[in-house]
Amino acid sequence: MSLSGTIGINREEFSLVVPLDVEGGEVLGLVGRNGAGKTTVLRAVAGLERLNLGALALDDQILDDAGRRFVPAFHRSVGMVFAGGTLFPHLDALENVSFGVAGGRQTKRREATAWLERFGVAELRHRRPDELSRGQAHKVALARAFARRPRILLLDEPTAALDKGSRPEVRALVAETVSAMSTLCIVASHDIDEILELCSRVLVLDEGRVKHTGTPQDLLASAALVVEPNVVPGDG
Image 1: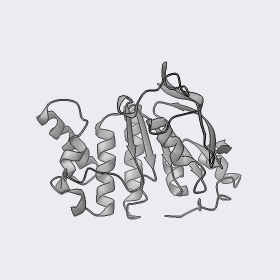
Image 2: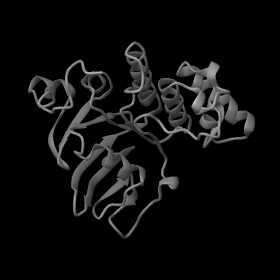
Image 3: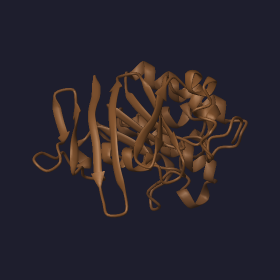
């Protein structure tokens, strides 16, 4: 399984041209200044932004070719967690994770409970989002994204909402699960530790263009990462 193509979005105030080539089981990192285009890339892959340049395909299926064909977000096999997570406020944690899981009610609840257990929040399954801390809500959002067993997983600052002590464990769980499910994953982050622990390859974006590419170790060694103002070793 592979995601490939070029994401091109031209607006009066913003221009983005980013080539992508991601394989199943791989975690691609996007780093760069605020406004460099990281979240826009995620939104385009998710089908929340339409291309007006380039094209994007998942294996042989065209997702968007800048006007002729477009697969809406709800027809793409995508799980996405925005920075801070976004849960349905009227549903409890179990119902949030159950949403979108295939099968009958009991199957949905059993699968959702298993994912909540993986992320260490099963005891909170009957709490609604306003009864959860920011970190707890984010773990529920991650559990919901994985429970759908998506072909593409998109994570925007995936552990920024968590306390420092739990971040390495959650990152390890994300990396292990992406590999086991052969999901292709794209992570946008400002945290160099997150990039080093999660990603096999990194694109450094600057004003909507790819400025550098390579492994996290390659870029760190060449100072390509650390010169970006919001990417600081040990930050977060």
